[in-house]
Length: 145
Image 1: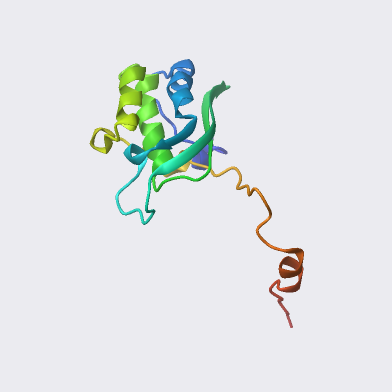
Image 2: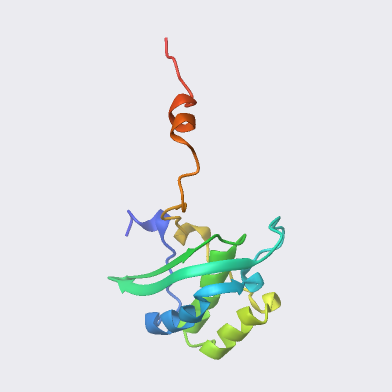
């Protein structure tokens, strides 16, 4: 589809099983060290991530993977999806997938999904980070002549 091409990853190598991908995602819910899904060069001092929700579902010809978390490691989603593709093709078992991230085996995570399929849906805060005075009184002003 020409209209969605810049926003999706066109993957034609083998059919994927969304139920297997969902089964692999479910154990990620909770607070975990996810160093296996962190690219080199990160300035983050730790690899703890609180994963709140995971979802994999078919939507027409598309497979939609959504992860909601307290934050994301550098390259986390691309590496995670790259490994989930192997699970969805049944090239990697659910047990092996879990073993890789639980034991922080970054050297096993070889494939990364392309950035074209990655989309940040929303950013949320427990509380709005700015007071109303700061938000309204200090907005930049532009004047056009």
